[in-house]
Length: 238
Image 1 (cartoon, one colour):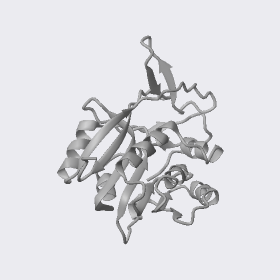
Image 2 (cartoon, helix red, strand yellow; image 1 turned 180 degrees about the vertical axis):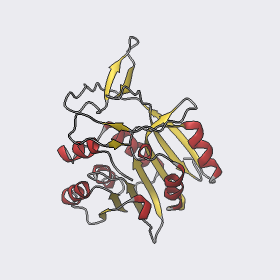
Image 3 (cartoon, rainbow, N blue to C red; image 1 turned 180 degrees about the horizontal axis):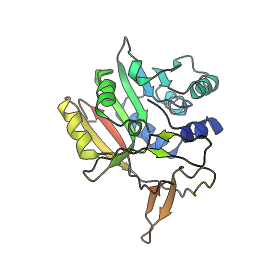
Image 4 (cartoon, helix red, strand yellow; image 1 turned 135 degrees about the vertical axis):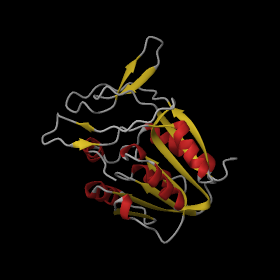
């Protein structure tokens, strides 16, 4: 699993930032999980650890683990975090195994990095307890079309082909999850603020307002993205 360079630069510039989408994801998590309960939480592709830090204020009896392929981001997460119940480490998804299960797993903006989503998603679900939940935020397509996208950001020196913009259809992902014995709920995330284009780093996300006032999210690759928050578990009654 390889994070693309523009995101690493963004996290390192402001490692303590918490995005609007992460705040909404935390709200959904805390409505699903009893805040007084205890358990184990894993954040896949933890970045600078801002999601874990803010979630730990809500789930005070949880132990937290986060990993990322970027050594720089993990160092930033470790430095900024003072909670002894949190452990960050550098790791590649393809080579990680755990000797315990997790009650809660989060993966923000990670699934779109992969050119095949089935293997990572199946592995993440294997790390869950029987009554656990996996929460994903990222790009998905409401139309039944799957895309695999690579880009090269020519505003950077020695630019290379990178991933992170792929979007799999809700129908494709839902069917795969159900075959594994899980249920899922997709909630569309509508960005409430305006984001201006970044001239220095054109691949960065920005918004365009339509005549009806709706904002669409796109980037320098001229790709329009739909963002969703996804809850996955064997029982989704609550």
